[in-house]
Picture (cartoon, rainbow, N blue to C red):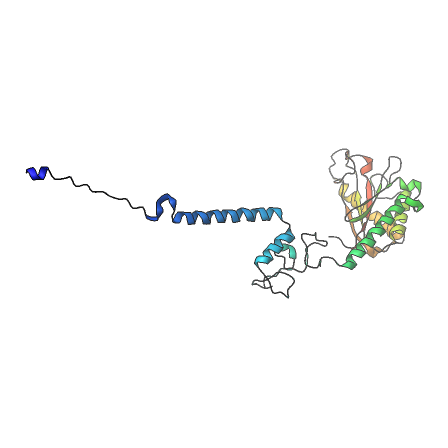
Length: 283
């Protein structure tokens, strides 16, 4: 018993072994690096989409989707057209050879600017010059006016995307039509003859449209539509009687009192008829 009491105690040491190095290394670092790389790529993509034009995005798309060298435009895919689209604006990698607009913008156009041709652009420029000349003749610029002072006070002209609009409007002391009717006054016949001569210098089609002022009270039967249309028809007849080619009249429209020229819908100024020299190529 004494020998047992004098024996040295047995000490057992347990060593904890950490596999993978603990917080100093491990597979989680690889996963985290992949996540950071993916996030960086995502934010880079968002920045590119916001900071580049359509042409630049097309170039980037083509870089990652190369095409056959002999093909000038991007393409590929399955379907009835082999992945091609007729209109180039429908895809980021623009593969169409046409454009949905008559004059596409720099960012949204087909290869080779096939939306318009040189001839189209020259024709449009010549037409613009002709319309400016028509407007100057009606306004009396440069001594080329074909309008007398009495007629000129009834006329307002403006160039729009649709064409040259020539507006004839009522004056307090000189209406264009008998009140409440489509019977033209003598001044209206003179205006129709003048517009027939001026617009006879070009070949563009024309449109006639009528507007009237709002009635002072609510009527049981609103005559606005019928009267505005009848006055536009009367103007068409007058310019044709003055020698204008009837086939060049494309449309005749009445707008009732829906598009007033001035703030007061009942103002005399809203009684007007318009002849539009239409552009040859309208979008």
